[in-house]
Image (cartoon, rainbow, N blue to C red; front, side, top):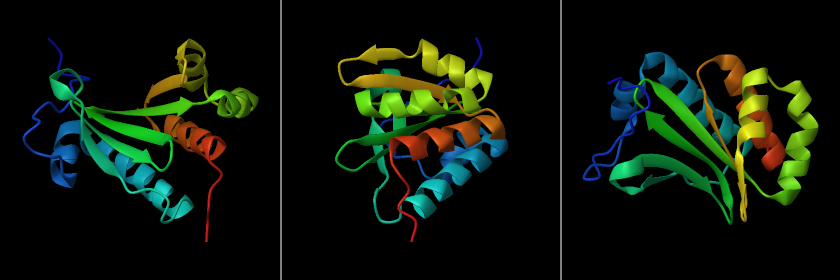
Length: 147
């Protein structure tokens, strides 16, 4: 059985930078760090990252939330999964920029399930082009607050 995609399931210890890097791998950790920097630089003082343990099935994830969810970073074995939930107004904005995004992200968005609280997009950030698209979608979800 492949370990790819397994979550960090030890609920007794909150992950730190070293354990995340060891779990997702050096290349994916560079993307993790880039995304943290992007959020910090574009939304200064807006979010306080919060580690959430969602039980033995889903494990640890890093949540960015103010009054509503912004995004979640899920450290998975040898990969990074990013989740963004788009409400109705945010979906309309996201769909306007879909043609500018790569085919993988477009397909993930199209196939994402829409629930009563929004469209739940989960994207594996497996290259820098996908990370560019994720950053673009985050700016659509919430306008940057650059200082």
